[in-house]
Amino acid sequence: MLKDPEYDIVIIGAGIIGSALANELSERFDIKIAIIEKESSVGHHASSRNSGVIHSGFYYKPNSLKARLCVEGNQQLNQYCRRKNIPVKRTGTLVIGKDDEERDNLEFLLERSKNNNVQDVRIINKQELMKVEPYSTGKFALYSPMGSIVDSKGLVQSIGHDAKENGVDILLNQKVRNINRKTNGI
Image 1 (cartoon, one colour):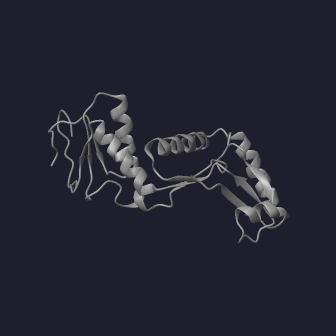
Image 2 (tube, rainbow, N blue to C red):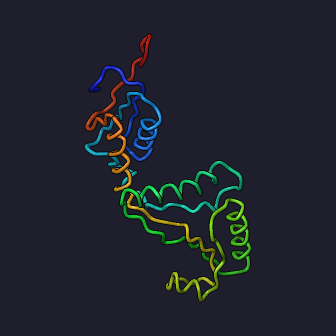
């Protein structure tokens, strides 16, 4: 049951999206926010069990919102993790090629990465590839040093904690059974 009969915003689900949304809104506005979560912890499902990959942004169509947000998000997420002491590691990203057709595809992605402002992306030869990934059977690769991995469980818990510190009520073990519209709210 909601602690306060009136909230400005109620978010269903305390995963990475719900927690980040509540945190951002609570930092920007003086409003009452609640997150309702059916589980006993923040980020109990997919948000804590994903691969933890922080993408570089070279795949996306240049000048698209997706490309811009991926590149900016990569930088902001790495900064956030360092500030909050969340384990994050710049592992780099490899797209491996074995023949001329794949080389053309990598050249295309290299150009796309430049248009998306992804830093320091380059095509590396077999010797450089073997230093980065010794078990690869490729002849060359597109290498982006901006690719990272993060402790996804630690990340979502930290963002949930930040939201709570900003005054968001996180209501755990609560299932939404129905939503009713009233004249002055829901």
